[in-house]
Structures are given as C-alpha cells and as structure tokens.
Image (cartoon, rainbow, N blue to C red; front, side):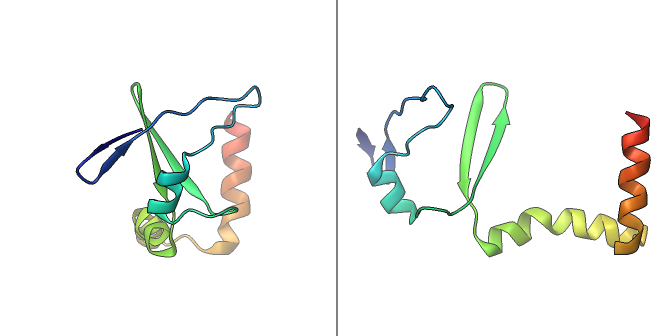
Length: 89
C-alpha cells in the first residue's frame, strides 16, 4: 500500500468467482460496510468504483427523472414501454 497525501493506492486480486476484496484501509476511509452498494463506471481501460449514498443515488438518477418528467411518462406506462423495447430486440 502506498499513501500520497490523501490518496491511498493499493492492489487487490480477483477471485475465481470474479470477486475483489477492497483493502481494509480503503474500506475504513470510505466508510464501506458489508451489504452497502457501490457503483462501477468503466471508461476505456479505467474502472472507477464509487460509494453509493442516498444523496449520490439521487444525483445519479436526477437526469433520468428529469427526462421522464419532460416526456410525461407515467408509472402505468412503464410495462408497455418495456414490452415494446423487448419486442424490438
């Protein structure tokens, strides 16, 4: 493990089941606990993991909610939208 200012750099290993253990210092500093959700974002060959909080979940879904609101989609419309989307595939 290497510390650079506020950064912590550490390595993990992928298990045969595709699981990665997050190093303990990183878990502690991020306040990650068993069962909590994380978001993975892949860009080219860079993978970013972000802790999900209700605030960040709302930030992530805000553009989707705004788009749905602008389109005036109602919850009752969702099953038909999904069905039509699946038919196109």
